Length: 130
Image (tube, rainbow, N blue to C red; front, side):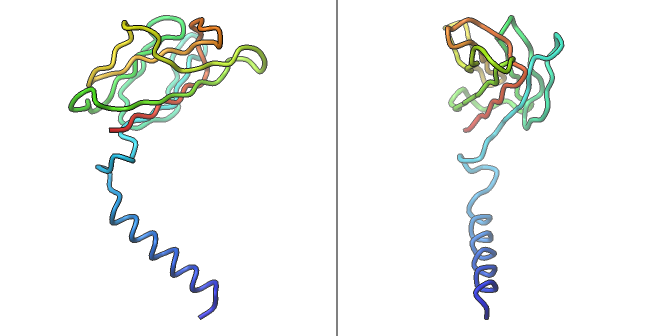
């Protein structure tokens, strides 16, 4: 058996082992994710999983509604934002205040500049794990 054949067989075996151990219920698999942005005065959802909608609450402030709510608020989320211009302030995704909510049905996220001013972004990516 050639080296290439052996490597192919090994890769196939590894794939089968991983597939048997990691299912949709595995905590390392994202339970919700969305790529959205504020473009032309409206929210544009480019792609997502388990996200029903995104609402703009104010400049740089968004509420992401889950299609299937979580059983509780014990989930972890992370987000990244893209600058709306080619040069200038970077954008960061944050939770800034106690008024930002995290419920089983939705999570509030904010997009801000490096100087902590709320600012919209044409692309925000949110991932939720539980």
